[in-house]
Figure 1: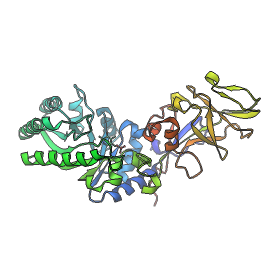
Figure 2 (figure 1 turned 45 degrees about the vertical axis):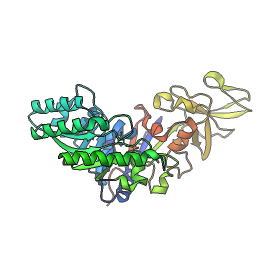
Figure 3 (figure 1 turned 135 degrees about the vertical axis):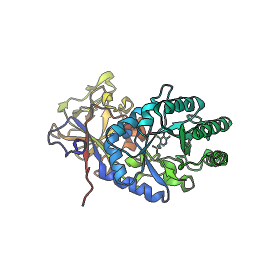
Figure 4 (figure 1 turned 45 degrees about the horizontal axis):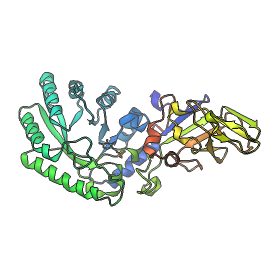
Length: 388
Ligand SMILES: *Cc1c(COP(=O)(O)O)cnc(C)c1O
């Protein structure tokens, strides 16, 4: 399999190493935490930047029985790669592609009447029922059906089911603040979810799965697990928030290690401006290292002057601005060889920063740090095969 080929021996400008053994172990740790519930591996947005197809395969090997994507294109790409696991896809706009999804056996999420109308029409044309999952807005205030509109959506879905146009396979919702322990909206959403599920079941819906839990809820709120949990970020070994804990607290290990090869190491005098705008000026005679990745590779420009990098055993900080393709670190007189490895983030056990460290340096969340790593950075898959 080319995606899981051995590490190339040629030196690379930059690489995102993806440890599939860590991903499999994370999936197993999450399954152990949600005993009795099935696990949907959320692989939207190219598996949060880790590569959708290899990660989906590894998650399935570790026992995930569902895959989750945002867009239908992402769901169809999993099918095109030969994955036949159940897939739920939840972000639709008018026009579908509903028919392609029905023919590819994808479960489609419906948040409103417009979507039910479009999918039943596509099912009529396809000559087979669509598998649909009704999404309740229990308080997130984003996608999902408002409680006031729920009776109509449930009634019309049941009517379509009687006509053989849909099969209602799931009832589900999504949390707003599950990563903030004790937030009052958590209990309110859980109560509302139970009410909306009970209503639909009283009306005659017979779902295969009821589900609500994202990563933080999978990790910390067992009462929200129902039939299925939907972790994303935790599967990639990143904690949903430092408030909840570190990955190690939950037996999780970061899957992505981002590194680059120094493109230049040089001596400069004191008082030398560094990078666009000269926002860093060398405090004295020193050495500078050129790290050949920039905002085009997904390194946040907000990391200018703050992002941490491990070079030659020491933490260095982005000196001056992150440019499109490169940034500079002050090596303080050290002279690592050109080509030496600069580790931006990884699991942390070689002393390198983590994606969470980058998130804090940039005022964002670790989800964004890993997901935004661009396509110009090759993903190098390691431990693709199960041992023994
Ligand atoms: C992204 C997403 C998830 C996974 O969220 P994490 O916080 O990464 O676990 C689950 N469900 C839905 C609907 C999502 O959009």
